[in-house]
Amino acid sequence: MMTMVVREQIGIFQGKKGEYNKLVLKTLYESGYLKPWEMAKKIADLKRKPKTNWYQETQKVQSVLLRTKGGRLRELLDKEYLKKTAQGYYLTDLKGFCSALTLYDKAQKPAINPYSKSYELFPELAQALEIISGLHPEAKLEEKSIEIMNQQIKKLLEKGFNLDAISNEEFNMFFNDSWQLSALQEFTEEGEKEEKWETPPEVRKLVIRTVDRLRDAIRKQLEAFDSLEERYASLSGSSMKGELTAKRRKDEIE
Image 1: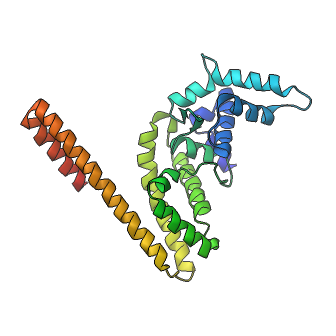
Image 2: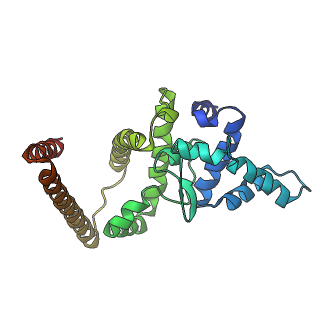
C-alpha cells in the first residue's frame, strides 16, 4: 500500500494519462532501448483483451504514444524522464530510472544498469566487481545497489520531493549524494555482520588502474579547461582570464 501511495506522488503517474506513463516507464525498464512500434506492441500485449487483434491494438497504443497533441512520449521527453536516440527511447539516468523503480514493490533487475556508463569508462572497475561477485556471490552487489536506490527514491517521495519540478541533471546531483550516503551505510552495516573479506591481489591491481585512469581523465579535463581559458582570454582580455582562473580555484576547493 505504501508503494502505491508513494508512486502516485509523481505527477506523470496521476490521472488517466498516468496509466500509460507507468506502462511506458515499466516497459523501458524491463526492455531497455525501444522504438515506438516495439514499445506499443509490448504495452498492447499487457492491455489487450483475449481474442482481440494484436495489430489493431498496437496501432491504437502507438497513436496515444506519438500523437502531436498530448502524446505520451513527447511529455515524458519534455519532462526529462526519457531520452531518444537512433536505437530508440530509453529511461534517463537517473530521473526516469528511479521513477520506474517506484512501480515495483521489490526492485527488479533492469535491462540497462544506470551505472553501466561508468563501467564503460572504467572497465577495470567492472572487472574488479565481477571478481568480487564471483568470489562472494552472496554479496549480490548489483541487486543490492538497485534495491537501495529503490528505497532511497521512495524516501524522497515520502518527504514530498517533486520530480516533475526539477530537471534530470538537478535530480542526479541531489539523488547521487543521498544514495551514496545510504549505500555506504548499508554496506558498512552489512560488512560488520560478515567476516571481513581478503581483497585478492588482482582486485587491488584493478582498483589502482581505475584510479590511474580517473587521474588521467581529470588531467585531460584540466588541460581542456586551460585551452578554453586561453581562448576566452584572447577574445575578452585579461579580466576574463582572471575570472575563469578564480572560478576554477573555487571549484577545486569545493
